[in-house]
Each structure stands twice: as structure tokens, then as C-alpha cells.
Length: 321
Image 1: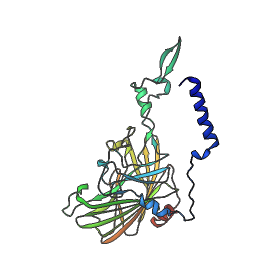
Image 2 (image 1 turned 180 degrees about the horizontal axis):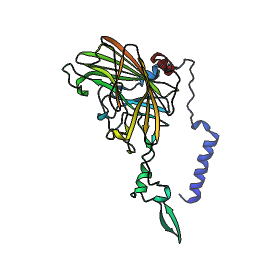
Image 3 (image 1 turned 45 degrees about the vertical axis):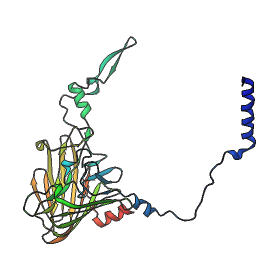
Image 4 (image 1 turned 90 degrees about the horizontal axis):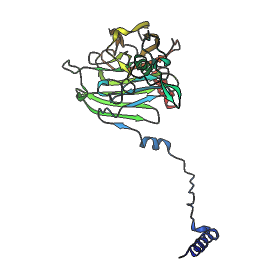
């Protein structure tokens, strides 16, 4: 076929399409008056965890604050979650190491020839100035909140000692529901974040909560320079301070100081539980003996906050709403 004949055939085909638009069929839109069952759709996709897995950590939060947990519903076995660190973080939670040398960006600049004129780039990353500038400021983990679990023989419980593990993130209400068994005793945990405040609510239920075997441990770390890993440094307790600014039978306020940075943390718990300090940066909230449940709220803020803490129930309601 010569070029002219080819062009004639092509023109005829285009004309056929132009006069016969039915050759291009557009699917007819199907409409239905039946409403979408949104609850069922979300329930169908709720994440479920049935074992301790470093790549299966779940989180609750509000877009500016996040609390990541293991299969217990808290940050109990954080050392097993290096890939997805069990951290408590807020948008305002940053920390910088001291800068006694006063490093500035210009201290890490290196001049390069660019077509006969010098142009400086911050490429001295291995210099003292470059190292400090690369590491600061860095994200801060505000606290680690986990269970202190003890077996019936008095030994510390390991994750492998927990059986019948099941955890589900309810996307409809924004809460994590966790269940596990330790030495025959079933423990149920509900973890919820407040939609507007940087706080979490924790509800723990069991047939028998023995404070010697199941309590809630709160620990505060120093800031770490890790860019994408665990932001907490537990090896330098002397570099930061945790002061109890106020406390009573059902609440405590901590003032945290890390070099030139500071923030505040608060906790409240149900009546009958007790509170005590076990180390310079570690504390225990213990349920009352022979109780079957304990509820706690943990809040964080960059400045001292005197607004009353919400209850666990109101936090769960706000999250669901």
C-alpha cells in the first residue's frame, strides 16, 4: 500500500468513528438509593494482631500526637520493636543537644567552584559542626508507658509467656482493644487517644489485678540522635530531670527538663490505685489489691496545663464522635 492509499484508509476509519459514536461505549452509571453501611465497611478492614511482631505495631492519635503500642495495648516490650519503635510523640516534641561551640550553618559550608565563581554548600557533614547540625533538633519520645508483668513464680514475664494474644484496632471508634493471658489470667486492655488533646486513656480489666504482678510503669527517656529509629536514649539518666511538680492520691504532674528544652506530663487514675517512684525517671501506678480494673489517663503538653484531665469514658466518647 502506497502512502496515499494508506492515508485514504485512515481517513475513512476516522470518519466512521465520527459518524458512529456508539463504537465507544461508556459504562452506564449505576445508582442506588441504598445507604452505605459505613460501620460494616470499616469493621471489615480493622487491623487484627495475634502475636508479638516488630512490624505489626498499632497506634492511636489525633494527627498531631501519636502513641504506638505492642500487643499488650501499651509499650510493654519495647525492646522487641526496634523496626517500628514504641514511642509517644507530639508535633511540638523536639530536643537539641547542648551547643557550647555555637555551631551555625556557615560552619558546615564548603566552597566549590561553579563556572569560575565560588559557591558554598553545607557538605561538611563529617565535621563537628556538620554532625551537630545534622543531629539537631531531633524528635523526642515523651514517655514510655507499659505494663510491669510478673509471673506467678516471681520472675519477669517475657512476651513469649503471654498466650491467647488478640488485638484489634477499631477504626470506627479509634480505640485499640487488646486481650492476652498470663499464667491463666485474662487481661483486657482498651487504649484510646483524645481527638483534640495530647493524651491517651487506658482501661485495664482482669478477674484479679495483683499489684505485685500487673502494674503500669511510666518511664521518661533522654533524647536520641537516631533519625528514623527509636528516638529514646535510656543510657544517660544524668542528662535530664524528672521532677514531681504536684501529686495527690489520684494524680501526678511531672516537669521534664532536657538541657534547654522542657515539657510537662500528667497522669490520673481511678480511686484505690497507688503511685510510687522506683528510679529517677521511673514510676509505677499499681491497682488496688483484689480489684478487677484500673483506668488511667496520661497527658503531655509543652507548657504547664491546669485544665482538668478528662475521664477514660469521656475520652472514648470524644474519640468515637
